[in-house]
Length: 173
Image 1 (cartoon, rainbow, N blue to C red):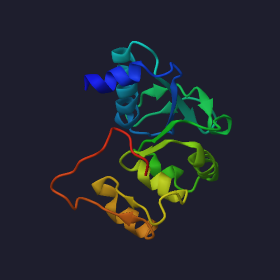
Image 2: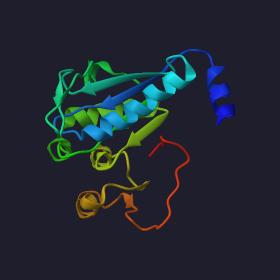
Image 3: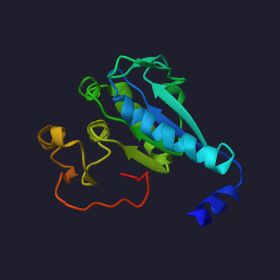
Protein backbone atom coordinates (compact mmCIF):
# COMPACT_ATOMS: atom_id res chain seq x y z
CA UNK A 1 0.00 0.00 0.00
CA UNK A 2 2.78 2.43 0.87
CA UNK A 3 4.35 1.87 -2.59
CA UNK A 4 1.07 2.85 -4.23
CA UNK A 5 0.79 5.99 -2.07
CA UNK A 6 4.43 6.89 -2.81
CA UNK A 7 3.75 6.43 -6.52
CA UNK A 8 0.71 8.71 -6.37
CA UNK A 9 2.60 11.30 -4.34
CA UNK A 10 5.34 11.40 -6.98
CA UNK A 11 2.90 12.05 -9.83
CA UNK A 12 2.59 15.45 -11.39
CA UNK A 13 0.21 17.34 -9.16
CA UNK A 14 -2.55 17.70 -11.73
CA UNK A 15 -5.84 16.54 -10.21
CA UNK A 16 -7.99 13.90 -11.85
CA UNK A 17 -11.49 15.18 -12.56
CA UNK A 18 -14.26 13.13 -10.97
CA UNK A 19 -17.79 13.88 -12.14
CA UNK A 20 -20.63 12.31 -10.20
CA UNK A 21 -24.02 12.30 -11.90
CA UNK A 22 -26.80 13.92 -9.89
CA UNK A 23 -30.54 13.50 -10.34
CA UNK A 24 -33.58 13.70 -8.11
CA UNK A 25 -34.05 10.64 -5.89
CA UNK A 26 -30.41 9.57 -6.34
CA UNK A 27 -29.27 7.23 -3.57
CA UNK A 28 -27.25 9.40 -1.21
CA UNK A 29 -24.89 6.52 -0.40
CA UNK A 30 -24.05 6.07 -4.10
CA UNK A 31 -22.90 9.69 -4.28
CA UNK A 32 -21.39 10.13 -0.82
CA UNK A 33 -19.47 6.83 -0.81
CA UNK A 34 -17.36 7.48 -3.91
CA UNK A 35 -16.95 11.16 -2.99
CA UNK A 36 -15.63 10.12 0.42
CA UNK A 37 -13.17 7.64 -1.10
CA UNK A 38 -11.70 10.31 -3.39
CA UNK A 39 -11.67 12.97 -0.64
CA UNK A 40 -9.97 10.57 1.79
CA UNK A 41 -7.38 9.74 -0.86
CA UNK A 42 -6.67 13.46 -1.24
CA UNK A 43 -6.14 13.69 2.51
CA UNK A 44 -3.80 10.68 2.65
CA UNK A 45 -1.77 12.00 -0.28
CA UNK A 46 -1.59 15.49 1.14
CA UNK A 47 -2.69 17.11 -2.12
CA UNK A 48 -5.81 17.31 -4.27
CA UNK A 49 -5.34 14.32 -6.55
CA UNK A 50 -9.09 14.15 -7.28
CA UNK A 51 -11.30 17.15 -8.04
CA UNK A 52 -14.89 16.05 -7.31
CA UNK A 53 -17.88 17.66 -9.03
CA UNK A 54 -21.58 16.83 -9.10
CA UNK A 55 -23.30 17.41 -12.46
CA UNK A 56 -27.05 17.57 -12.93
CA UNK A 57 -29.28 18.10 -15.94
CA UNK A 58 -29.58 21.86 -15.40
CA UNK A 59 -26.72 22.45 -12.96
CA UNK A 60 -29.20 22.91 -10.12
CA UNK A 61 -29.53 21.13 -6.81
CA UNK A 62 -30.84 17.58 -6.67
CA UNK A 63 -32.84 15.96 -3.90
CA UNK A 64 -31.56 12.57 -2.75
CA UNK A 65 -33.63 9.59 -1.69
CA UNK A 66 -33.23 10.79 1.93
CA UNK A 67 -34.72 14.20 1.18
CA UNK A 68 -31.33 15.91 1.58
CA UNK A 69 -30.28 18.25 -1.21
CA UNK A 70 -26.97 18.09 -3.02
CA UNK A 71 -25.48 21.10 -4.74
CA UNK A 72 -24.64 20.32 -8.36
CA UNK A 73 -21.89 22.63 -9.55
CA UNK A 74 -22.30 22.11 -13.29
CA UNK A 75 -24.89 21.07 -15.86
CA UNK A 76 -24.55 18.11 -18.22
CA UNK A 77 -24.13 20.56 -21.10
CA UNK A 78 -21.02 22.13 -19.56
CA UNK A 79 -19.15 18.85 -18.93
CA UNK A 80 -17.06 17.95 -21.95
CA UNK A 81 -14.87 15.30 -20.32
CA UNK A 82 -13.91 13.67 -17.04
CA UNK A 83 -11.17 11.35 -15.94
CA UNK A 84 -13.68 9.42 -13.84
CA UNK A 85 -17.45 9.45 -14.31
CA UNK A 86 -19.64 7.98 -11.58
CA UNK A 87 -23.23 7.04 -12.44
CA UNK A 88 -25.01 6.35 -9.14
CA UNK A 89 -28.29 4.51 -8.68
CA UNK A 90 -31.37 5.03 -6.59
CA UNK A 91 -35.14 5.31 -6.84
CA UNK A 92 -34.83 8.21 -9.31
CA UNK A 93 -33.25 6.00 -11.96
CA UNK A 94 -36.66 5.07 -13.36
CA UNK A 95 -37.52 8.69 -14.15
CA UNK A 96 -34.19 9.13 -15.98
CA UNK A 97 -34.22 6.05 -18.20
CA UNK A 98 -35.81 7.84 -21.16
CA UNK A 99 -34.14 11.23 -20.65
CA UNK A 100 -32.54 12.28 -23.96
CA UNK A 101 -30.35 14.93 -22.31
CA UNK A 102 -28.91 12.31 -19.97
CA UNK A 103 -28.27 9.91 -22.87
CA UNK A 104 -26.63 12.69 -24.89
CA UNK A 105 -24.42 13.56 -21.91
CA UNK A 106 -23.32 9.96 -21.21
CA UNK A 107 -22.69 9.17 -24.88
CA UNK A 108 -20.82 12.44 -25.37
CA UNK A 109 -18.40 12.10 -22.46
CA UNK A 110 -17.87 8.33 -22.61
CA UNK A 111 -15.07 8.33 -25.24
CA UNK A 112 -12.95 10.69 -23.14
CA UNK A 113 -13.54 9.08 -19.74
CA UNK A 114 -10.72 6.95 -18.32
CA UNK A 115 -12.91 5.20 -15.74
CA UNK A 116 -16.66 4.92 -16.28
CA UNK A 117 -18.27 3.66 -13.07
CA UNK A 118 -21.91 2.64 -12.72
CA UNK A 119 -23.00 1.92 -9.17
CA UNK A 120 -25.91 -0.34 -8.32
CA UNK A 121 -28.98 0.53 -10.41
CA UNK A 122 -26.96 3.30 -12.10
CA UNK A 123 -26.00 0.58 -14.57
CA UNK A 124 -29.56 0.81 -15.91
CA UNK A 125 -28.91 4.46 -16.82
CA UNK A 126 -25.67 3.49 -18.53
CA UNK A 127 -27.48 0.70 -20.40
CA UNK A 128 -30.31 3.07 -21.39
CA UNK A 129 -27.73 5.21 -23.21
CA UNK A 130 -26.56 2.12 -25.13
CA UNK A 131 -23.14 2.04 -23.47
CA UNK A 132 -23.35 -1.51 -22.13
CA UNK A 133 -24.35 -3.29 -25.35
CA UNK A 134 -22.75 -6.78 -25.32
CA UNK A 135 -20.70 -5.90 -22.23
CA UNK A 136 -20.62 -7.80 -18.96
CA UNK A 137 -22.44 -5.82 -16.32
CA UNK A 138 -24.35 -6.08 -13.09
CA UNK A 139 -26.98 -4.13 -11.21
CA UNK A 140 -28.79 -4.18 -7.89
CA UNK A 141 -30.45 -7.55 -7.32
CA UNK A 142 -33.90 -5.91 -7.01
CA UNK A 143 -33.44 -4.56 -10.54
CA UNK A 144 -32.35 -7.85 -12.14
CA UNK A 145 -35.67 -8.64 -13.85
CA UNK A 146 -36.04 -5.08 -15.14
CA UNK A 147 -32.45 -5.10 -16.41
CA UNK A 148 -33.03 -8.28 -18.42
CA UNK A 149 -36.39 -7.03 -19.69
CA UNK A 150 -35.27 -3.55 -20.80
CA UNK A 151 -31.74 -4.31 -21.94
CA UNK A 152 -31.51 -7.90 -23.25
CA UNK A 153 -28.36 -7.16 -25.27
CA UNK A 154 -26.37 -6.47 -22.09
CA UNK A 155 -24.52 -9.50 -20.71
CA UNK A 156 -25.99 -9.26 -17.19
CA UNK A 157 -24.21 -11.18 -14.44
CA UNK A 158 -26.32 -10.99 -11.31
CA UNK A 159 -25.63 -12.79 -8.04
CA UNK A 160 -23.94 -15.69 -9.81
CA UNK A 161 -20.88 -15.96 -7.65
CA UNK A 162 -20.24 -16.67 -3.99
CA UNK A 163 -16.89 -14.81 -4.10
CA UNK A 164 -16.28 -11.58 -5.97
CA UNK A 165 -13.19 -9.46 -6.46
CA UNK A 166 -12.45 -6.12 -8.05
CA UNK A 167 -9.22 -4.74 -9.39
CA UNK A 168 -9.90 -1.35 -7.87
CA UNK A 169 -12.61 0.88 -6.44
CA UNK A 170 -13.30 2.08 -9.97
CA UNK A 171 -13.56 0.00 -13.12
CA UNK A 172 -14.50 0.82 -16.69
CA UNK A 173 -17.77 -0.86 -17.63
